[in-house]
Length: 242
Length: 354
Image (cartoon, rainbow over all chains, first blue to last red; front, side, top):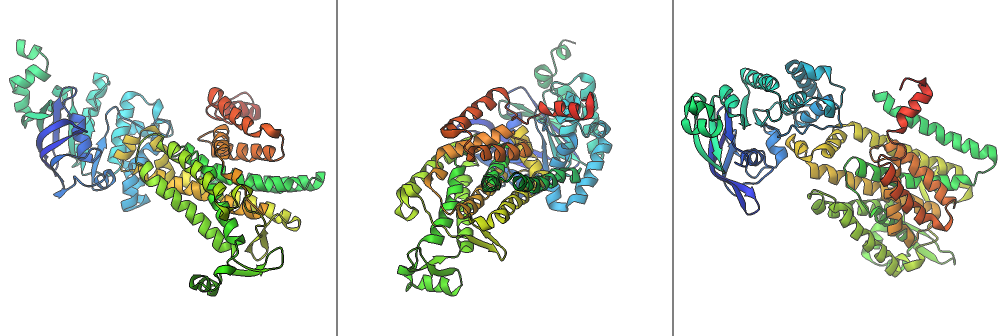
């Protein structure tokens, strides 16, 4: 579904991503873990077209998309749940969701958007309750759900999530991760970026570890969880001392 | 929810009729002239209001677009084409029926373009100029449009002031009426006053109707989302630059249409219409009305313009608008008709339960 080969990208002269290669197959949850500044967000922004790569290639659904605009990439079925949610605070919950259906409405018309809206309300019942509230008045967890619902409104083939657990209580994080699992059950493909390595590897099929712009380890989640380097760097010391 | 949005429009229509009846009743029909002019300025202001409030961009050159509309309409309908009568393009245009043969004030025969053609050329030019300015500038994030339009406004002002074709500091006078429809002539002639008043206010209502529909549509939702988070909006597949560009061009077209019609109504246009003070005034009026409050913008825009045209502010006119802009920014950035008043009004009307 998504294939990235030898990708370099950054801001101006600053090279943030160095020679990144990765792939995501249909129906998988793939996670990319790494510390602050490793380039996780830059990677997502490059995939969706907000940043143009300087080298390498990105193939989405077997078509190269390095030269496409963000609008084209989103329309072709790639959606991003941005870091820190970034819901449209001064708009209602429903309007936020309808905005997420922007490309869907262009492609399939208004009826498809409303069908998808009903589907999101089913997935996130709390959003239905809050539909007429300003998005800025929601709690952090609700805002995260709204951001996810907004991304799903475009009926994406691939959903990319940028640190959905940031700033949320552990119980809420568990709910969010349950929803990600449910997305996979519904046939979605997810690329999940997380600092919370343990939780992310807990639900993912495969994982990549990113360190200062390079992929240093990759493999199935259970193997990464058992990897001593990963344990030391990302899973807390207690694992090692045990 | 939809019909509720249109109710104020009906209110505006009622207000239009009421204002007319009021002037008849009080014997002050001469107010209709300023009310007509205010409606045209109102058109400029609501166009700018959508650009500022919804696309989050400031244009400090809207007087320039107004002037492009007005000056081109004036020049094309007054400048004699007789010396070029033998040129192939004049003959071609004559055959196409877009040239009027008439007499100037000294009884000499003259050829000019028809107001309809002048209007179309003027409005199209303003739109294209906006496009040319907007394409590079609106790709950037931030308030670069304000700077670009500041430069644009100054250039336009200087061009109209310097070119003999545009009458230099005298501007253009003797602009003929615009026979827009069989029964409607846009002109300052006394016999057309009432009809012109209704024409201008009808245009304002139609302009408002279009903008309200725009805001309520997918486009309007996309525009508002740009305000909250441009990055998230783009990640939802919204092309921020293109939307801003569309609104900028639309607002320039509103200004140009107002410029064309007001020039025919006044029978002339002068360089002060292109001045920076005018542009700042439009920005001030939008701010007073409230950036995200199109109705507030309309009411304050038309109301204050009317007072200004009646000469209430005397020679302090521009100073008054500058002061208003400062005061609004300091004390009520939401506009005078902003959110704070709404609960108060509701309390007064419904009683107690806000």
